[in-house]
Image 1 (cartoon, rainbow, N blue to C red):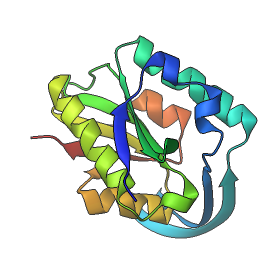
Image 2 (cartoon, rainbow, N blue to C red):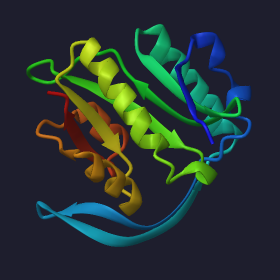
Image 3 (tube, rainbow, N blue to C red):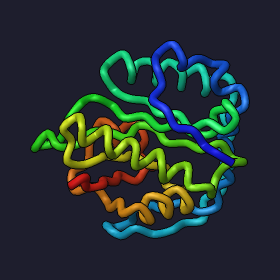
Image 4 (spheres, rainbow, N blue to C red):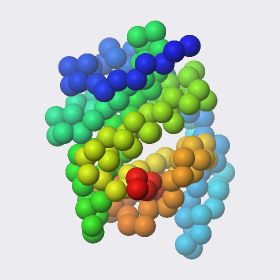
Length: 178
């Protein structure tokens, strides 16, 4: 099955784009920092986005594009099966980070390397925008962290405190673009 990737425009980002998207995740273990060490803990819950989450997502993705960021979509038979977003605000003590704010693959399409391809599209765009590193405030679920670690992401050398305060259980990661 061929997956087509494209940069999305603000007009393309609307609620109907996500009508067949399944943001489902069954979480059994999460990483937590305890006394300076990362420990995998038994933390079980299910995430399933509903109408309110998708409305908020559309608002955020439109804002990303309006402020000069980029949103990529992955499509199978013209149906969105994955997306990623890159913000347009360099930050850090050396102004070298750009934030990968979203990367999600519809549940039925995981394990097909769609996330990996979207990640590398974001990397290419971040380099064009002058970044030296990607910053990812990532879900702490075992599978999510395994995805990022397999790509070469490491714990962020510099934490973005605004992002930490928004999602205190997230793992703060970076990826070198050099």
